[in-house]
Amino acid sequence: MRLKKTRTIARLGLGKIVALLASLLIWVAPAAAQNSDQYSFQEVVDAGHGFFGETTGGLAKVVERAFQQYGLPNGYILGQEGSGAFVAGLT
Image (cartoon, rainbow, N blue to C red; front, top):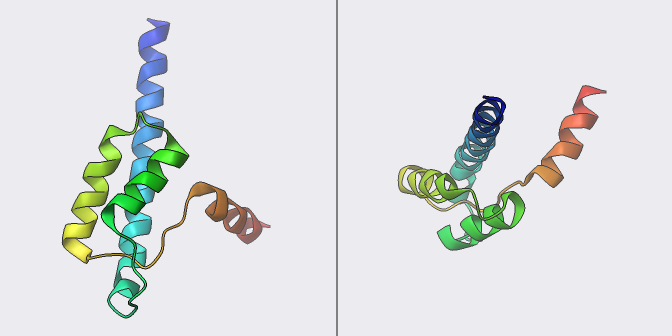
């Protein structure tokens, strides 16, 4: 019972991380049309796997969908960079 509860919590956490990454890709996408310095699908997926680990199978699907809808981004933010700005914004 406890293991099932832990897995559910882990899945919810992973879902939130994937949703955050997708929203960041959507937020950065309009700037991609204006700038020629763009990141490929594979670069973004590799960076996400490097940060979140290889267990994020849904990451590639989310990134692929965002690329289809909004084109190539000219940047991306991982939790390391974004967390500093988030904490500084709260203080």
